[in-house]
Image 1 (cartoon, rainbow, N blue to C red):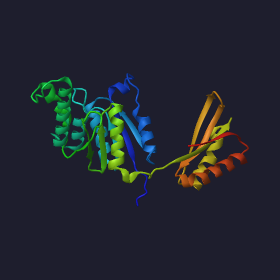
Image 2 (cartoon, one colour):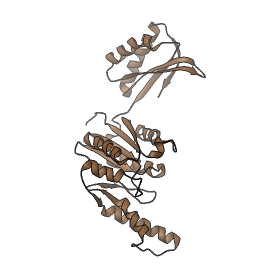
Image 3 (tube, rainbow, N blue to C red):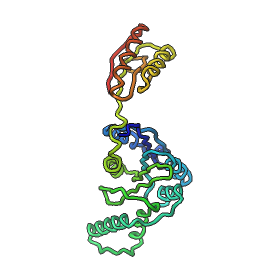
Image 4 (cartoon, rainbow, N blue to C red):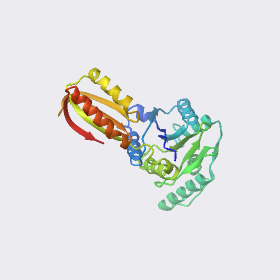
Amino acid sequence: MNTDKPSIGLIVIGDEILSGKRQDKHVPKVIELLQARGLQLTWAHYVGDDRAAITEVLRQAFARDGVVLSTGGIGATPDDHTRQAAAAALGVPLTLHPEAKALIEQRIRDMCAERGEPYDPSRPDHVQRLQMGYFPEGATIIPNPYNKIPGFSCRGPGGGMVHFVPGFPVMAWPMIEWVLDTLHRDLHGRAAQRERSVIVYGAMEATLTPLMERIEADHPQVRVFSLPSVDHPEHGRHIELGVKGPPEAVQTAYDALLAGLRAMAQRLGPEMVR
């Protein structure tokens, strides 16, 4: 079985995030969803509603092996550019996906029935909604349990698999869960992480660096982290010093870290496990 840690990226698209009109909720939620499946977010990228910028980000995502989740911009209004950018990045045309067309038409029928209106497929607003089913040629759909309007997935020439979902969390998050559990179940557990850390009072990072380098050299599976704070309400000036990595490797490295800190006569506080 391939146990290599998979690369998983997140692209968050939308001017409203970069302008501060809305706060991004996708990064913390995706981290949560991945951790629940023994996975880890490798990178995240924010980009505004600029088609050229989105195209370049997607071109890079398609060019490298890994899984990428992309949120936002897949609607059919003038400020939605993601579908067109994805097609440009792949060098393929947009085509009306037959299954997406059927799902969107069913959604329109449902809306008409709720309002007591007849279904007229020629109505301009109904025709406009079908634009949301135009995906890059060769795309597969991602089901949307909220309103049936699907997302889509595309694989790039470099092996990158990019999954496109709406920006609305109520739609995006269950669609991302479906992607992870249906299309990438084989990755589950391949990036399970554990952290162990301790509060070190009054220390300087420069003083601790040689110990940190030694721990990483002696325990190549783990990474040492240092989170300094100068005004913590409980611990005051301190450094949270710890190790993270595969669960089976963390304990030995952490024991070595504690031994090194005690040998340096550092003043230690509470220990933490994550």
